[in-house]
Length: 114
Image (tube, rainbow, N blue to C red; front, side):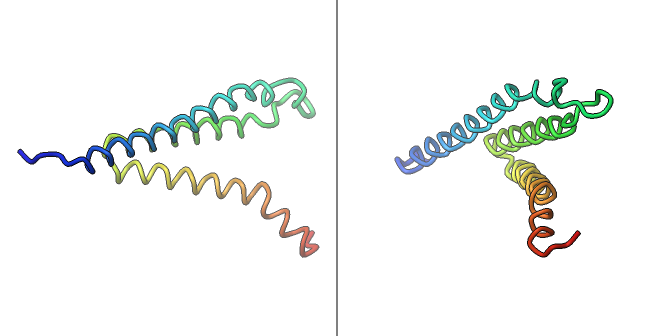
């Protein structure tokens, strides 16, 4: 049985600290999202007939936070392929949403495209 060196112990404890920091950040985002969730479904945001405007965005945000948690959990449990795939997929979805929501309108505004 090989002896564990001090550097192996430091690496494993440092790796656990990084994962803990990522989970705390993701939980903070989730808590802030749950605080803002009534805004998405409140009557203030209804438009023309009582349909919530941002219900889809709230559902998408919930799925993205769940995907981040699953990806981080899988990376922590040494399932690197599936965990990295989850994280990359979630980041691609976030990037696409931000581009659709903000990027395309900014490009149209810059080049005066109607």
